[in-house]
Every structure is written in structure tokens, then in C-alpha cells.
Length: 420
Image (cartoon, rainbow, N blue to C red; front, side):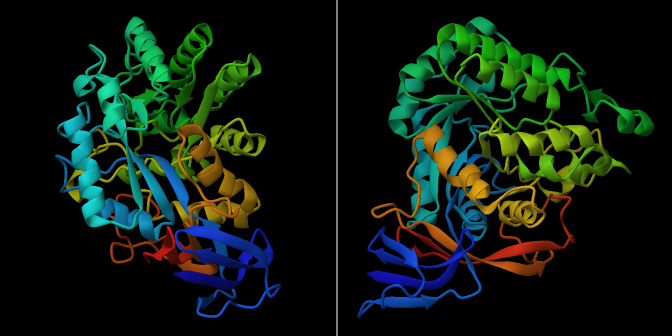
């Protein structure tokens, strides 16, 4: 089938997109060529055209925690959030530490969303995420895993981490590390600082993230292998990453929209919706992360989509689980940063599409002839408020509920098939 999207806005210019089958045929200035005969035409006047986004860090909860989210509901949220590919973490039950679990995830994704979004599992670095021995990484890669991580359970044994980094690199799998010294600030509820002192709760110092990132970077330099630092939240960690990159270390890093938009004051009043891991930091940390996106120090954006049931968040701060949902809202939250001139539209596309595809060796749409026809149309000016009725995830644990957001997906195609 041939599809022609006319009069869309892409990177500030009016364009026409011609799709042939599953691939991009041409992207040309609007009106340059007539719409071909027999083409399914779609007038996108007033809408922004973007390539489908890639989320390299999300939690879909299945198998084991389907009451929070399952693969079908998570991919539905991804589809309506502009994501054409989702990399899911291994903290399921059972953990994704065997080929059988990987294949189960992929089968569930194909059954529920045969046309996408595509699911790419992340292998558990250690069985059960216990940090005691290495998982069968070759088996997991063969089954379909595209990266390795111990998720929210940092590998404390540096000798074991060395072996994981070496084997992962040999298999072409990038190791993603949640950087945290679990003994420093043990039992923390938020960032250690002025707000934690005022609230009278235990905090986690930023050095707990930075010291683990420094270890990873030095080990990666010694072994000459790559390492990826997950959900960076602190300026001190950025300083460590900058030091590593200046030395030529193959280190990459990510952060999430909530670390760019919120700070520790969001937990004022013991607001459990804003409790995340790593925690929201200071305004200075937030501003440093924004600068790191502009400079390229931070390579990609991810959601760290972490759905929880209402009873797991509607409790005391110390009992509430960490995390917030992100697949439904990341597009609008990031577009708000573009609207506020924190990012350009081109930078947004690089952070959410081109660079994650490069890091994890995934297909992506750069709108060149032959690229996969994965793209969406967004109303850049629509103002809307997230609520349980407007979100597609099973869970709605986010501090952005009821907030006015700008920009909303209207239509989404993957491999030339319209899925929204």
C-alpha cells in the first residue's frame, strides 16, 4: 500500500511524506510533487510529523505483576505515546534471566500488537537479579534480548561486574547500570538535602549515584568496553560522566523527563507520586541535566515507565514504592521542553530516536528512502490534562495528573500500518 502524508510540519518546514509498503519512499517539501494515483492521502495540515520514538528503559511488569501493567496495556500506552519500540527491564516474576521468559515476552507482544510497537527485552545480568553470578547471556541474546542490566539492583561485586561487562561486550550487548551505592543512605525516601531535612525523612546523597558511576566508567576504561549509565539524576554524576568521556571511555548516559521538569520540592507534603529511584534532586541538578542534553553529555532520553497499583502509592512515604508512569506522557512532557526553548525539535528527535537506535542497534526512521515507515502526527498546540480516563497504561501513578500539558499524538504508523 502507498500512503501519502501531505502538508505536515517537520523540523519547522511543511513537507509531504510518501510511504511505499513498510518503508519511507520520499520526504519532500510540501506540494513539490502531485499525490500519486491510487495513493491513500492524509492531509496533516497543522500537525507535526515525527519519527516513532524509542524507549530504552521501561517496566512492563509481565510476567508476574500484571495487576500493575501487562505487555498488551504497556504497548498500547506506548503506541498512543509515540513509541514504536520499547526496551523492557528484567524485573518481572520470574525475572527475565532465561530464554523461556524472553520468548514468553516476545510472544505476548506479537499476539497483542502484531503491527507494533515492537518489544525488545533486556536480559537480567544475574539470575534473580541477586548479584551472585552471571546470567546465561549468550542464551538470552539468542532468544532476543538486546541489552543487559541488573535494573534496580546494582551489582556490588566488582569482579562479577567485570565479567558481565566483558561477556556482554563480546556478545554485542550494552550493559545498562542503575548506579547507586546501596549502603550509603540505606532506607532513603528522597534526595538528601534541605527538603528531606524539613520533612524529617532519610535522604539519599547524590554521591551515592556518582560513586557507582565512577566505578563503572573506570572499569569500562580498563577493559575498553562500553557501559551505559541509567536515569542520571545528579550534577555530580554528570561531572563523572564528563570526565570519562574526556578520557575517551565508551560511556553513554540517559535521563528522564521527570528529572528535567521536577525537583525535590515535588515531594513536599509527603507526595508519594513524586517518589522515584533515583530520587528527584535539587533545582541545580535539574538545570545541569538540561544543559547536559544540549551539550550531548546525556545521550538519550528514556521514560523509566514504572507503573504501580493505587494501593502501592496511596500510602505513607516510607511504604510507597518508587517510580512513576511515563509512556503516556513522555511525548507531551518533552514537547513542553521544546515549547519552552529548553530543547529544539531536532534535539528531541535525536534524543528519543536516532541516538538510542545507534546505541542499541535498533532500526529507526530518519525519513531517508528505505527507512522503516515508523512515524506519528502530533497536534503541537493541543492542551490536555492527564487523568485515568485519558491514559492507556493500567496505572496512573504520576505527579502530572491534572496538570495542563501541551502536545498530543493524533495518529501513529508503524511499518506503514496505522496503529492509532
